[in-house]
Image (cartoon, rainbow, N blue to C red; front, side, top):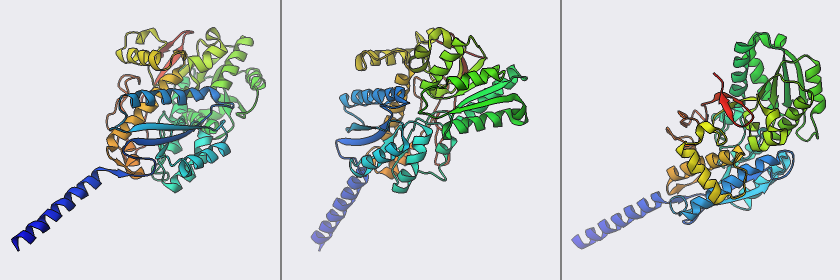
Length: 396
């Protein structure tokens, strides 16, 4: 009898141990003992192709991570499909990644209209849609879109931030806006008007829009100048920002100019536009700029620069998209580390919504990432900065 009881106890212990083992390793799609599959679509071609550099930097970061053993012993496999900055192509690509390639999550898809297009499918399928390269406030709405979380400062707050500075420094400004005619551009215009408040109707003298696929925006810039604009807001991506800055220089026109932070790249925007022509442009900075002498001795920028030389030889060190890709990838690494051996989609999403005082070294000092199940805002610390032709100066 005692022997039988002992046997039962042994069975119970084995069951408990088995249960513990099972609790320690819970896998969802795209995960095994050796691998975590991560999917993304990216604009490797098309009107936003400059931003394909984000994906290349992320791939390099994950390769470095894998060479060191990966995350909790698992290598990260990044599968990237070209979406050409086309919503329809992105939806098709995301379906392939989820249904055929069986990825665990979708990571860092670029663009407000692109992410808006793929979001319903991913939320319906309950696939984590993490740290996207788009700033719409709707990507920080856990009550409505539990499975989607942004990363960069949101567009509404960014535009309000510029409006507040314009009101303080030039309350009688004649404002002109050049914006991309989609969810991204319209949300920034909405934020600008909200920031200007009841002065918006009087201060904004011209609004000019364009489609992402338009070959040029020169006529819109000429119209803005003709309206007597002395304060200009460029709610564009890199290609159109470079075109606008070049045209401003051709016209020898120097309005006070605020540029969407996602286009404020020395490599992707200012070099094509001309560094001298770009001097004076203002933006909301949230990362240390490796081109800026004030960060020359910063240990974290030194680490990044050495990483770039070793892992992305030949890449443009002045292109801050490389720095952003590094930061995005580091954020995903932290989420996967926190997830441990519970790599179900549900727990991956739970960890993305439970980052506590997480510091990415290349963000501005004092910037800490805190998320919660009711707060999906990731990067919230920004400072106004002005390009001086070589690097950025903070604007007080």
